[in-house]
Image 1: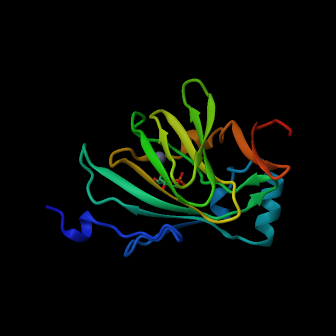
Image 2: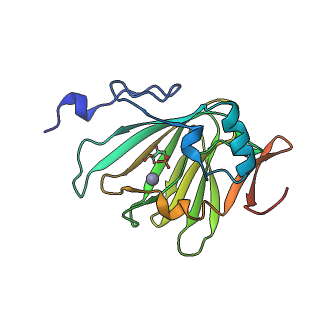
Length: 190
Ligand code: M6P
Ligand code: ZN
């Protein structure tokens, strides 16, 4: 049986840290192709390469019935008027679903159905659980002034497929307009 350290994790909902678990860091330079305004991206990167998000993952077992989880911390910010975001992915095992629980901050999950291309946004904030069905690309977006902290729980065998969604990026983006987050099609204007 797993030992108590493996059965229990302690995390900080304000910082996104899991005790004893190193976090993967994603800086702006790791997000080439993710923001719709490529010129604004290059301009921002020429000035600085800030930390955009961290992910601390717990993956103890990889069997068919096992679960993994990860706490994410997504910083506040914009490139042009598009809010800071995660790369986003499909699960390599497309049937695999995931749940996200907001821990602190104010965010959205951007979902895109692989078959129909249909997009949806759902809130990602404390007291909310967002369900990501299988066959759905998903990305988190921080639309608030504070770091967005959340936890994602997914089948151990889900895997991350970044390439399929990176080819087109997402068809919709979340931009700031008159102080509010707005979902627009990629070529759209607000
Ligand atoms: C969540 C989970 C992780 C994922 C992370 C960041 O914490 O879904 O599996 O890695 O968000 O998302 P991405 O991998 O798309 O950068
Ligand atoms: Zn996922």
